[in-house]
Image (cartoon, rainbow, N blue to C red; front, side, top):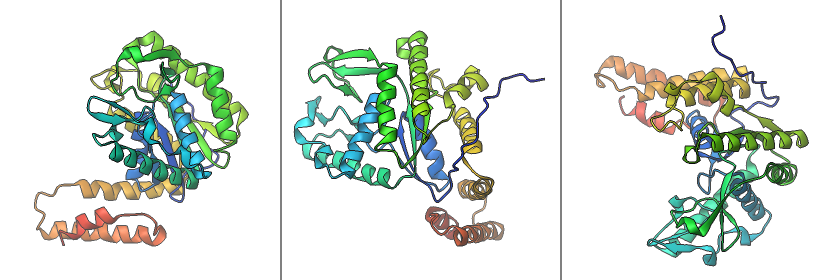
Length: 329
């Protein structure tokens, strides 16, 4: 008996491995996936200007980084672009984590993030873009869509649903120009934006999905991973949602990650991941008697496993795990 519908995922033609350089940008789900990749020793840079939700702000961030790579220093945030409220200097294109009581320090960390993000994007061969919502907020005075409202009065913004054609045209241009030398994986975040109700959330996700499909029809370097579909069909149960009924639980994130791994990795990479995961599990283990000979042997064996992997893959960084196991010998 088949008691649930399995999302059919076509394996990616070009696989991700530990020689890949990955750039991930978008919603907090993008950060979830980046953290999984990072924990398994992949080279990944995620959300350099902070978590972003709407496709316009994500596109603007990519354009800013690409412009800086092309020698346009005006792509760096400027002092006159900063806003001040509630004792903090902030920028509408950056996450609130970049805000600061000192304008120069706020500007410094924003510029540092752009430079690091631009460098990562330049060297990336794989770009993962996770769109969260088609709803956006336009700053009335400037006429620009903001990435973050920074808890400013609602009267300063106009809320709008972005248009399918506008989104798709914007990303077709990006994929065929600034990102033409990258393999691009789009996904729609499974996180539900419930503040506007389920109807608006459904409409928003539908707009994003159709827009991505249009992009994929025009750009050969684009693939789609159905994280939204997996959450809503395979994991069709509230036990897979956190208490806010919007975010996936760790169990759901791990399940979606496993489906991503099946589509993205070769058998060789999957076998390597199993070895890395075992080392990570052993490093997280808290021994009952850390001074025992048995635990010393356990640590020594893990150091041997790390050495064996590093002989094959010297670029993988196990410094933290080495420190952990070595201190018990």
